[in-house]
Image 1 (cartoon, rainbow, N blue to C red):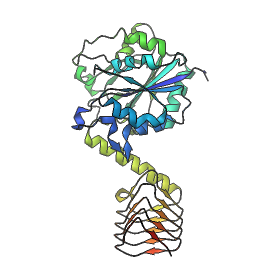
Image 2: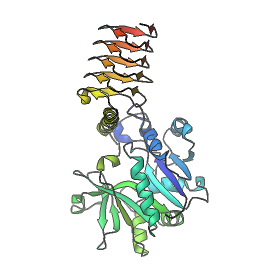
Image 3: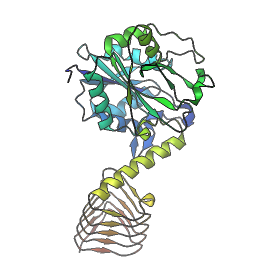
Image 4: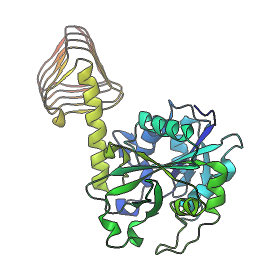
Length: 343
């Protein structure tokens, strides 16, 4: 594989007006933590050279929330589009990074494996630019992929600028790119604001590359759910539900029984042992650990609690900060807060 160093730029400056919130969009909670944390978590296992987060709206709050990830920060002081946001990151990128992966802080469903596969494909080829695409049933609000006769990306047309025919295209821009750094910033300086939004579109670098005789590679993501951009409360709920399903599937694959999983809430830091049964309408959150062969009955709520092996928790019980010994039984309708229950 090509040994070029890869840097990452995460775009997190937007207000998120469709969220109808005073809070910065990337700070909204998805599966129990800010959605931008899921993007950073997906990047953490990758051998990237550096990560730069571009902030703008409520910049200090976003930067404080992301401080533990070792990222650098760049400020976009005016909201003048995605291309302008990437330009704001230029001075924060070290000279060592030769390829830049760009993604948005509002895509909490993207998987580490997908990002790694895209990087690998880009580095294996000779293209200056690779664009992630996917196909969706409803492409409304997404940029449409215009494909050349050779099968490469010729142009990306934004929703507001698309013709009626172009709006029927279902292959969309997933908003993730791998770009040769020198080409990226040279192209962005050629991008104007001649569009209905009066913004610097990052996507215009595709047309610049094509006009310069460069072929733009497509990296197709077959699981379109991974590319969901969260722009509304409804999409926020879809992202949360997807991450919850993924985590419950992981628990079940490890030997935990989840009865009617669509009714069960379990946060990502919870650990549960084999042959434990989680009944419907149960909530388990915080740093809770549950041993082997336990049973948590219907409508129970566990927060920051530690259960040993062979524990039974009766229906409608509430445990907060509780340690329960092996083989203990918590009776129905128990309410236990910051106490130690012993056998």
